[in-house]
Amino acid sequence: MTKNVLFYARYSTDRQNEVSIETQTELGKTFVADRDWKLVATYSDSAISGTTFTSRPGIQQLLAHVKRERIDVVLCVNVDRLSRDVEHTSKILKDLNYHDCAIWTVEAGRAVTDMELHMRSTMSHELVEQGRTRTREGMKTAVRKGKATTCLSYGYKLSQQRDENGDRIKGLREIDPVKAEIVRGIFKDYVDGVSPAAIAQKLNDLQIPGARTKYWRDTTIRGSVTDGNGILNNVLYVGKVVWNKQKFRKDPTTERRTSRANDMDEWEFMDKPELRIVSDELWERAKQRQAESREEFDRHSANRLNATHRPEYLLSRMLQCAECGGPYAISGKDRYSCTNRKKRLPIDELDGECCTNSKTITRHELEERVLNCLPVAFYSIETFDRISQKMIAQEVTKLKSVPSRKDQIATELAKIKSTQAGLMQQIQDRHAEGRPRLAILDDQLDGLEVTREQLALELAATEAPTEDFQEKIAKLKH
Image (tube, rainbow, N blue to C red; front, side, top):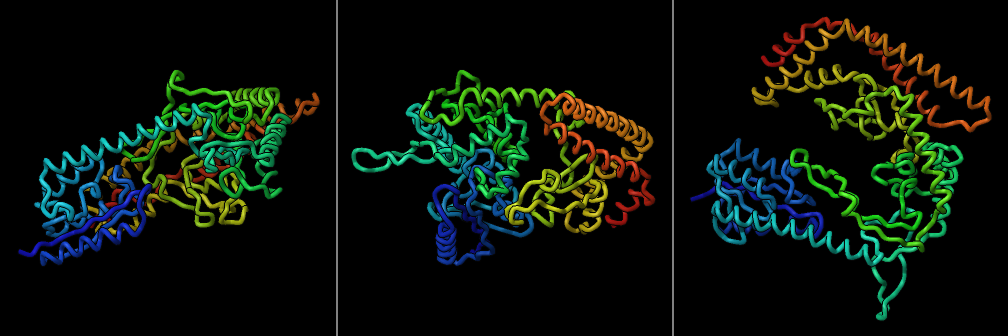
């Protein structure tokens, strides 16, 4: 009896390459042809781990195909190709069983039973976890031997020391004299009052390649004091190795890797004086200026978003700037703008120039445009109803808040004006006292002015929409 077959192939990022997909596909075609079955379509995921699910477009397309057309068999070389995660395997199996679709493997030459599939997925899952544990223990041993376990920090290079057989000893590092001088220059400029953004601009003007990319950015220099990253927070520059400060876990919802701080008793410490680049005196002066800048920022910051998590919206993480390709994100009061332009970051694709795209758009207007352009046929009726209800609720909330929002904007504008006056007075006082000018005060003034302009635009746009939103939804639905 002829069977309709979908074939699935996948290779991981660490061991295989594109040839593996071709090899798997040829094995699948031969398997189908030998049985006189019909190969309806082939789906694949290249360089994607089998521990993911929603971020694999190939497997998602395959499952969608099973739902819209009669498919008898999903074929793969072995069950590891489908998934290496117990939960995801169960999900795939449930979906396929619901549509009376069997899982076959070329390796076994037959259908895979539910028990066999669950046992194999459990074994695959356990092998992945064991591999992670062995890798981490190997890294811990290497750190205790004074070796590098990750990419080299800026200012260092691989050592060329050889063993008795003449082979290079892997993992050893040493100071790169040229880059070490640049690191010391960064610290000296910073303690002299130069901002990280100005230091990055200076290095780019001198055409000095960046630490990870072609151009320097202020975030590369500033980093995070809490996480201990960035040029100004790297303790290796004072000859101290700290490893295992954090661990990484994959968020089961977003499938993104997130970091978590480890307890200090899990950290690995080691003194490596031969790797020192910065003196203790220069390091302490940099730490002191960081503390002063943080205190100054906390005292005068008017941006309350810094203390909260930004909410998710309908188009979050889906928008790109047409000029530089960077992310378009909420900036200020509910308006989308180019993140790279706001941060004045040099862009490799623009030959080191900053993005000049100054166009902004309100979140409400953009979401409305997108929904108006999408035919209802693209959605199931349940999905359309869910989205439309969400949009109507947002519209009702907005209409109810218009009068109070106008008053709120006026109050915020008055506060910004007062804060700007206070910052200007501080700058004048420091100048009169002969004290160095703080770049952070200039940055705060610039940020306040951007916020003020956005509030003024929002104040002008807080008018009730002329078209009834529920009528518009009804037109789209019918």
